[in-house]
Image (cartoon, rainbow, N blue to C red; front, side, top):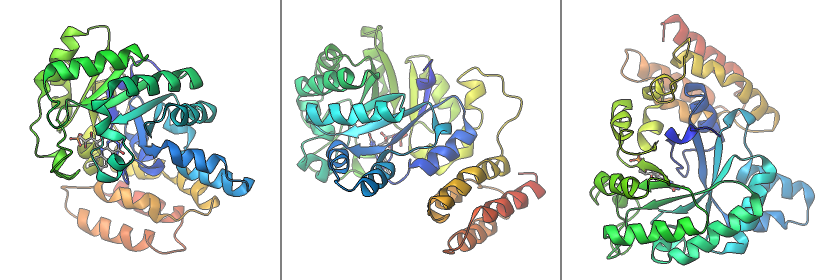
Length: 337
Ligand SMILES: Cc1cc2nc3c(=O)[nH]c(=O)nc-3n(C[C@H](O)[C@H](O)[C@H](O)COP(=O)(O)O)c2cc1C
């Protein structure tokens, strides 16, 4: 998969669904995209649905994607090697490029399932999961984690975690450069309150040069990313990609070193979504599922609010189809956007 990981869009529940990924693909062809976290157990149940039509509908909803989304990583949540192996095998069958294990999510629900960030306290189990996922799928297995949790937050703890997990076969680590307070902070607070410690991620790369290290957390611009890329192999951007998709229009040129004849604009992005909207409509999907991600596309220009309001009104109608996007693209083109 070359070096798509040099810039990736972070997995985000309710955000990085297939529609947002197709949108980001209009903006960057070369970057690695991640799915939302999919719980391995949910795949296990879907796979055992005795009714074949309902089985394929459930699997499609959980892990379906459009081929233009490649390179694409499926992020899995779980702590049971056999379930994760089954899920990773499914990922390989479906054509995902790699699988990623979530060891960074601090939500209470995830902790009750004993996975997510709390797994940082059990690196041996994470290594066993990674090993099982790799063996079952033949895909590269990567891990997304924090720099620490609760009192397990020293650099030595981080290094121990990474070393043990690497022994299970993980070669790439996406490190959210913030510890998580599992006991006391909610997930939103855990993305803002603990301070960012980029220095720890840099040190990890220095001391483990053979591993591929991606840095995540608080990156707000292409310049931020370029400066981090002096220290690590890749950067992963979450909220700033969702809230400002076009801010990343120069990523292919500036980060992936591609020669790009044209820079994506809002109108080309919207127009590029039309074939996907057509397919989605044929599958019985509603346009709003896609259009809801477009509200952040046009910002900081006169008339942006009006464009968004019109799109929201028209795309929200039950009967709305791709023609709404065609009209929205035309309006942007007329204004040179
Ligand atoms: C709405 C939302 C949902 C998220 N869902 C996931 C998830 O499913 N899996 C995961 O590993 N991280 C998840 N995260 C964390 C992000 O992947 C990322 O690590 C975090 O937002 C920090 O990066 P940023 O500062 O660039 O946003 C989520 C974050 C947000 C804001």
